[in-house]
Length: 143
Image (cartoon, rainbow, N blue to C red):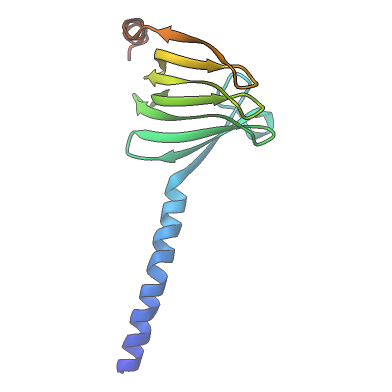
């Protein structure tokens, strides 16, 4: 009787991490296929693949890959009004793997200073996106 309980307890202790890992794996990843303009499309028409991981109820981190599995960009999305908006820090890459640009989005609109780089890694002039202009755009879009 005691031997059965010990075996049962050991089995449960062994299986619990596996069960919780499989639940996490199911909940974490979401894959979206994108066309050349980064809009959702069917897998057979896709130019890019966006892999998303849920961080909280309304926040996702993502990596977008091209057809050759090179990283196009890394960033985060926020869900609002049943839509996903770029929100937070983003880094875009040249096909060479060098950083193309990095900056911040607020609900789908670029804000603040964005660093820019050439394909060989040299600096280009930064671009500045006025946060007040972003607020006007969000108001017009109903966000």
